Length: 251
Image (cartoon, rainbow, N blue to C red; front, side, top):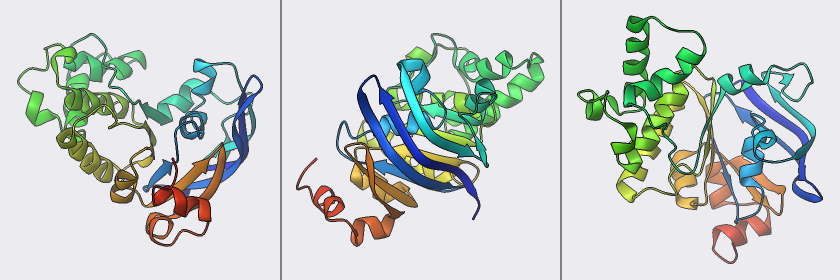
């Protein structure tokens, strides 16, 4: 099993508020790593640090390092555009562009210079299939993405992220706005995607973390309290705080 991402003494602050405190963690390739913890514990800030998204949403100060395939993404000469192509992001609420289904998936490849229609057609079909959406929309890919259901929109956003050939997919509570049926489809998709991609998912749903992930990290007050095989973290937690959270005593 190869190492894909490693954080070393990672700390993130917004002004005087320190959201992440000295987190060191390893993410293995082609595995699903879940980040759990109560609201406000730093889960989303952590995952956004893995492709420097915190720089977009606020005035973040980041210390320590995040290594992607051994290179620190916070080095001054690191290409951020290339980084966000390699490390895609799926957000809590589906955010399709107000364009057709086809144009949503083709958007990234077009931005990166792909213009030939036959090539774009192939990219759109392949990635809608990877996102398990093709069979549902193949006869209406010219229709507005906004006409899709919430679950379909989220899978479309996954297809859009896949269309630029990422290596890592970050998911920030991707099912929190979805019903149980749509959630089950996304969870099944996450497992399937891990065969080809490295997946990191933030979730407030502990049952979801137990179902979909290989490894789990428990965050509390900005610190990584415990990290290990998901089965071990849930069935035999080493830290009393982890056990209290998992058993519902707080959080």
